Length: 195
Length: 195
Image (cartoon, rainbow over all chains, first blue to last red; front, side):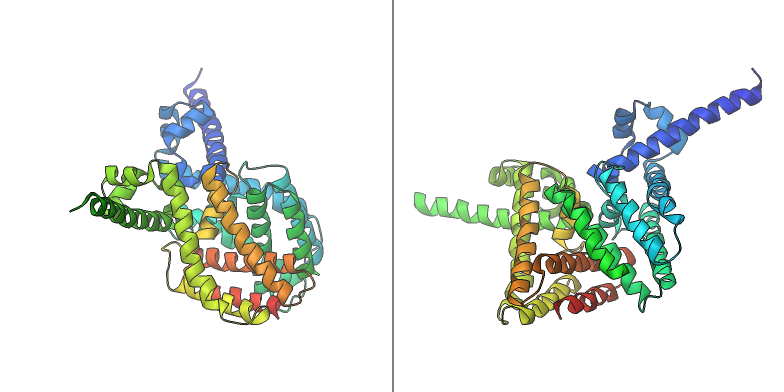
């Protein structure tokens, strides 16, 4: 075994650890909050060693930031990408509503929408974790607004505000009242905004 | 000093402890979550002794339930009561929007709306704390719906859904982006629903 391949082996193990830990941390964030993530709790949930996790991330905060990045990747893959083949504007907005509902129905995260959960938990805080949460929410709002511009909306920012509000409410109500019909209700109301 | 007055004195001290601890716990819930409340953290935040807190509440869970009850009392006093002098229906709905905005602008809770924060944190859970959170949200939704019935809405439940969604979004966006204008934006959008 050459030194190069040994380094590659370590890198590959590091990547697996990183992905598994970040994914698990993102899942935990939706049920018990980003604050509940610790090296110890993550080791227990993943079966990885504490030292292995610390070697890859260096700090608890780095794990939390990685959880947001992994959640962003998953959100992109499950909500944005499936809708992107549609024409910009109304068709794409309708497809985004469909994929957003599917993202929750399929239980991609065990505690519902990652952005919804972490925005409330970290909204008022400062630091790198809050900045990552804030940026992700802003990206989503900007994306919606750009589609409303394409759709010829008279007030794209307000329409994005309302759609995001309705979807979040659907998520929270479904978590509270345990009924997927809350998601369909949110979509029905959102469709009246999309037109 | 008679036995009776001694008992009354203990009761009075218990009431002060209960109120102070419940109020502080409700405040902490909006910044760091109901989960972050412990007898130790509450003793540190209030200056009360751990044993004094435990004597009054008996358990951490009882403190969390008391925090929800105290938040309900505060919400009622600051959001509902000031609006109640108005005529049922649209006038009262408009007044509720005003008092809700004031409740957040005045920083009644340091982390924004108590219902918004705890609904997300405890929405998917079971047990007495989650039940109290769920009941408080349901009460608020039912109150809005009843006013929309009075206002002659064609779909009172959907209008209540939307108003609650917009207000929550205003709260979360203001926490995230640090701008009170988010609250006014939410009210402007909500007023188009009230009519």
